[in-house]
Image 1: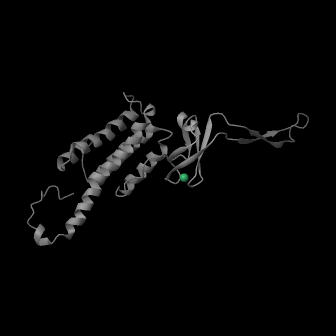
Image 2: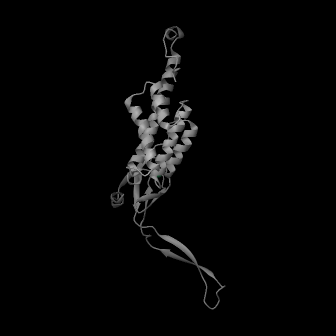
Image 3: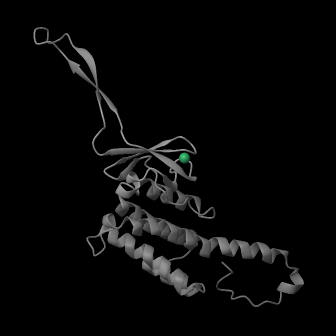
Length: 228
Ligand SMILES: [Zn+2]
């Protein structure tokens, strides 16, 4: 982030408008604060005074040239807006899972650990929505992978979110707060899982519907899968 602020020509995705645009770096933030004063002789005769503080220590601000909104950083971390630069959920993500995804997105800047724990919960909810049974998340992942022809990439994606989410809430080997990129990657991985488990299936089903019935009624589908 220090490199970012040393540059006069910052190009980044704006957290307000989502456009990859030029940002102006504002090298000073002026703060105004008010306080109450009272003369010693008349302690109840108070009045409000205003002071201006030049260049608040540790704060930086940039302004998006596209939408004009400001983003404010404290000691290199974005504190406003609270939302972070991660993708929105896949359109096909079930609505209740989307709510948890957005919650994770909101807390990412403040607590990557919390974001990872929430994404683990979102994955479990997604598998519930897909009618996958199992006592634990690990069971549900294994049941999904056994029931559907899952490739190794998808299996890895499931377990990445499960393991990182577990590590986030238990004292473990991975320090998520020091590896925010890991937390950011988890959002992309969950979207990919939705793409694999819902979007691609929906696309294929939609095309399949166009085929004449006499061409498809002789196909032997595995009845246990019901083409989920
Ligand atoms: Zn903007």
